[in-house]
Image (cartoon, rainbow, N blue to C red; front, side, top):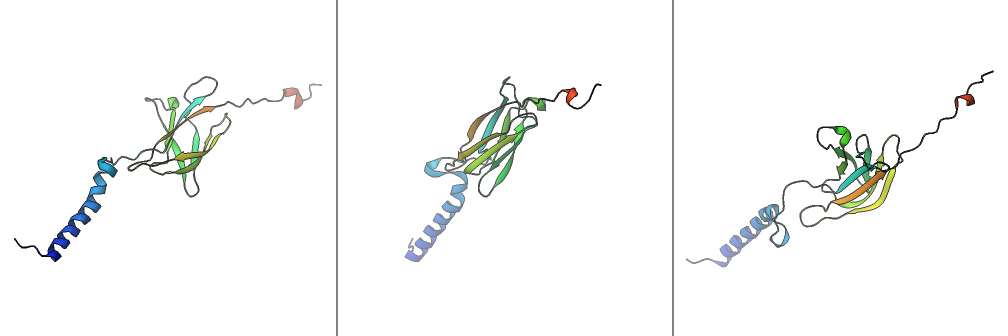
Length: 149
């Protein structure tokens, strides 16, 4: 079979194109197989600082970098939403984030310069531990508002 240089180059070009277009969808660098799942960039275990109890229920959690803001969501533990411990977000988004957790009755929890990196396939999840501190509310005595004379 006589193959001309033009046909051989055309076939080689077609094979290279196919391997580039289709090969990257299934395999990463050095034969590593990449999955199609979306992975979280930030995962935060949220607990009450005094009791150690899960405290993610009712938390508003925001992760923000220069051009992107994500509202993290709580993952319930079992069937009781108040047992939520973990907040997750920034799926497949590498960057440098500021993370803010806000919950009524607690001090805001703020962390800056949280770096989410990426490997050949996915982001590398950063795991944080947030201990929320309760705010003590002191009400003035009733006598400050009323005269009992």
